[in-house]
Image (tube, rainbow, N blue to C red; front, side, top):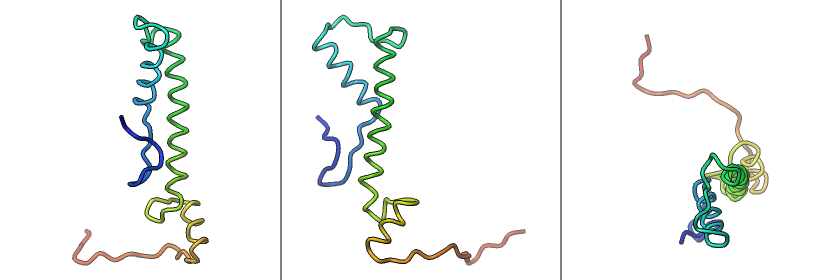
Length: 103
């Protein structure tokens, strides 16, 4: 069984496929093994809707967990990490690549 959330090695996000599989397994265990949970049924569509919303929540949790890691933080979250650590973010600058000739 996979452990989701914060682990010793970082954050493990639960995917849409894992969410819908868990919901369907629970329904078959608790209600009936003969349930038709395909996309053409009402229950299958409800499962898909809830699974999509839960997957988006897991993505948000992943972003929040990565917000305090300078290697994973992006945009405003990276600015927040910089403020916490006292690092001043430099503005954009020009780059140089040696040995490249464009015509």
